[in-house]
Image 1: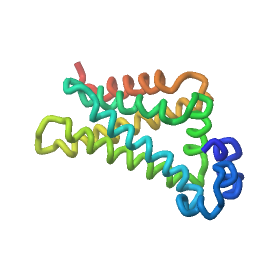
Image 2: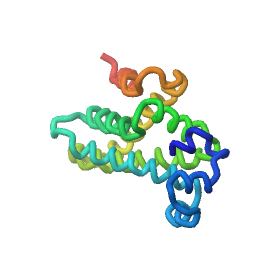
Image 3: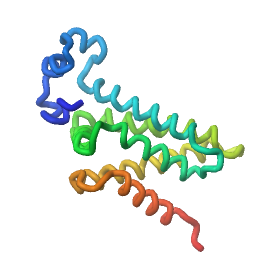
Length: 177
């Protein structure tokens, strides 16, 4: 991921990736049939973090609290430091060849978050639907925060931007007083 983020997705060869990983090209292809699959594998870890984070939330957390907690938990998993996380985010979000990977990543996050939320929401005929709405709203907020973070060139921390976006979202979607 560091090599792809540094050199660019299209400019990085499979041979360079294999050499950087200390493995042969053939071994790399055994695990990752395409360069995009490397990014997909990296994103799968984030999906697991979302699910585990919701499961570990206290019983009295609201759906909004669970979503915020889960999305916050993803941020430190993106990379070792902010600069690297910013480079990875730019790579995935701004590389046309990775658009399908990015969309699959977010769809997977939505599905995983919805399943995790559904098991925590009160029983109702619309529980699964409510969980999907909440999950998609949460991922939309995360994507919006990530876009803003990229626009700001990664200078502020991502989590405060995420908090601001989630607060804006809650305010806009709240019933009128």
